[in-house]
Image 1 (tube, protein in one colour):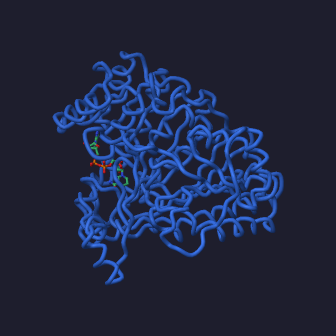
Image 2 (cartoon, protein in one colour; image 1 turned 180 degrees about the horizontal axis):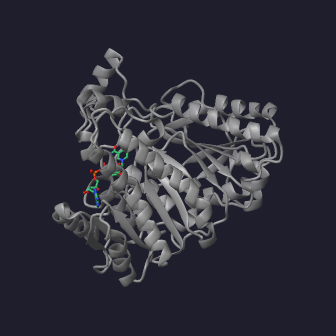
Image 3 (cartoon, helix red, strand yellow; image 1 turned 60 degrees about the vertical axis):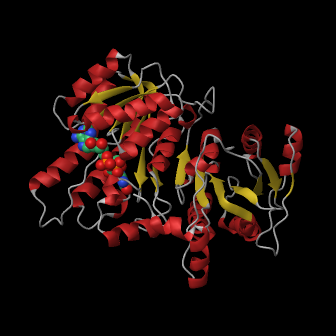
Amino acid sequence: MKDRYLDFVNSPFGTSIARSLGLPRPEVLRRHRADQAEFGGMAAIGAGPSPTLFDALLGVLATIGMTGVAHESAYGWLPAAARHGVMSGRFEPRSGDAHAVDRVQALIFDATGIEHSSQLHSLYAFFHDALRSLAKNGRIVVIGRPPATCASVAAATAQHALEGMTRSLGKEARNGITSNLLRVAEGADIDAALRFFLSPRSAYVSGQVVTIDAPSTSPESWTKPLAGRRALVTGAARGIGAAISAVLAEHGAIVTGLDVEAVRGALDQTMLAIEDAAPSAGAHAALVADIAAPEAPSQIAAALAASGGIDIVVHNAGITRDKTIARMSGEMWDSVIDVNLLAQERIDEALLEAHVLRDGGRIVAVSSIAGIAGNRGQTNYATSKAGVIGRVRAMAPVLRARGVTINAVAPGFIETHMTARMPFGLREAGRRLNSMGQGGLPVDVAETVAWLASPGSAGITGNVVRVCGQSLIGA
Ligand code: NAD
């Protein structure tokens, strides 16, 4: 559904009306486009004492073509850049002219060496100087350590404090700027996560905390990181599932899109369009099944085994049957729990037991911010989506031995059939009450799923990443 307010206030006429009336003007988010460079420009680098990731950061920035410039807090950056033989310089904070073009595209802060809350002042020093120099649609990435891995209570305390800082920056920055925290354990790789959070692909992901606790390998190609992988996407006929299928295919995966008989025509259309956009010599396939049917797990496992197994499972299919609990029928409760939660459990069990999901595979489940915050009239839905989060967290350690990761994405307000059916007032509230001042698009969820499904995300498991523009709901 079109967001007419966003279009209006960003039109030439609407911009002046919005200015004169003092109306909020949400930024048109910059998303990935094949005909535009994904990265470029400068990233200002700040750091606390004894930063540990300068070499890794220099490596990533060099491969994506961004230049890191050192704030005075980033002591040791310039010698490290010289060692790597890459161009660098000192960061000069912007002053005065609001239209100056000397803005940086990203602010990156290495907080991994912070071991005591007295050292948090370095964050203040950097962001106080640098925030106003960040361009529209810019990126803030703070990198710390998982508190649970810290050697002292003082260090764990200070590392946890980074969360409040990162989230507040997301709320202050506006202008389509995102702010996220990566908690990187010693020996873990930041490449895939840093690329994602610096790129336009993470346009609607802000205020998130992601833990990376194991090493990973870089994909052979960053433009087709899923080349040669096979993926199953449930609920693929339309909305978020269709976007996930398209983005996985664009990243090189061979996709089986699954949906119910009632939408067979739409599913076929979706898969044909994907074949046109990302040809697979006819290997993208449509699979008709009701995931809640008792025979579905064995039927799906057999179909996927016949094509040699799979590497990625995306549990996207979901339904709502909204009513306050006193008015809700038992059937409404049962069907939502069955489709949104129990079906995922049964399908994973079948795929894992028969090794149809190969070792080193990826499971990504679509939850919802309703599963975090709860929602009036959605006890069944919120219960199912909170269950998805619980399952991801509990399964992650179990699947580690097989190198399988399992994560959840929790969309906020995404412009789809589901949200177009909401009453006007609720729909407008969902759209505006987030740091981006607008709803997300299915592609925003899809890009996040594709990142979690990539080989470079081997070190990310048991995480829940909200794709909600930093929604105030469930904050
Ligand atoms: P949608 O209704 O547009 O699409 C859901 C798809 O799942 C449909 O094609 C439907 O046919 C399919 N499906 C439903 N039951 C099925 C079953 N039993 N077996 C197989 N397929 C089935 O919904 P959407 O907005 O694209 O949502 C996709 C997922 O994202 C859902 O899990 C939803 O709960 C979640 N989500 C959406 C939003 C949002 O704002 N749209 C927000 C949070 C979470």
